[in-house]
Length: 342
Image (cartoon, rainbow, N blue to C red; front, side):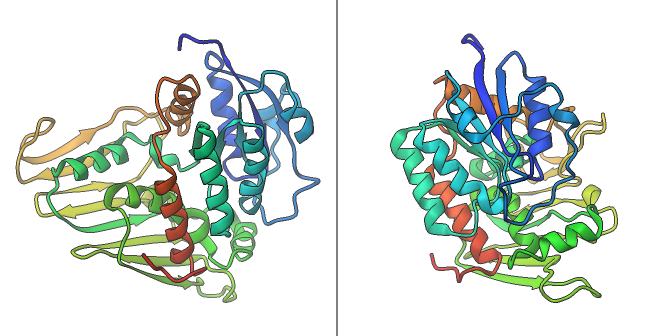
């Protein structure tokens, strides 16, 4: 990028993605200058799942939120506080006219999220939700393929965000949200499905507990989105053996299908996807292919680069208020917080 480094700070180290975000920002020292980090352990009061490992922050300057927001020349912040504090923290950053990467999900109050997102639009601030599949080349290809009609009319989408990490501490954490793991992780899948298919006609959640856990720990969840000619199933369970490697996306259409499993990989192997097409297009001939998206070394880098381009005026916000609002509205319906009405 031709311009000077973007002065950025991170508010929060307690979000599940906080550590990953700071690691990515530190790798991108040609684009970002990290001016400081806010540790909210003492002030945060809402549910969190944080390892407390401070190694990734070594050598960075810790400061209060006021100090960070008053840093001369500050241009952007990554908001990485616990889930239910993200929106209120982002509001304070918006009032300072700062560009933002705000992690997911957008809280449990739709009106508060709408106020934030509308305010960002009115102020024309660069803004990015922390939905990590926006930087996933295979998933972004699938969205493009659907829009180009390469897969024909969509019949079904299946997607899973299950895992088996975090032990009992994670189950207790998930139990603090009425929407359980669907609220915490299903949001990534909903962002992707909205980009593919828009709003469904019906949303039906099945928020279950794994055998042996109390009912309030919704750690085995399924939500179905109904469309006029398609169904979408979204799954998330925190007790699935080898769940991370079995996270998947399957799309079936009248002209083709894709299977992506795992959804991500950072093990030095290329990200590949099975693709079958009835007809050829400008990228692939008819038939079955092992589509290769190359090595993806870092989960957040391409997204943060996109944020930098938005800040530098090279591109407009790629995701609109309408998109982010619809994702949030659907997330709350998918997690049992509200009934879905189009």
